[in-house]
Image (cartoon, rainbow, N blue to C red):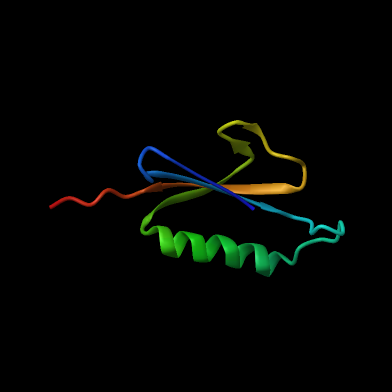
Length: 74
């Protein structure tokens, strides 16, 4: 799993491998749970799936989500 935040935590990038260390597929429900918990803990915002990563392309076995947190005023 890769996590990267930029801009004082306004941008959050999270990449999860689709295979484990032995080369077996990671269950989709587990992958989705990692994304859901991260999104919940990061707070409200706009999240989208992406194949990009700030430092370059992801590996074929990685999937990522990019989140742009809502800023609170007041």
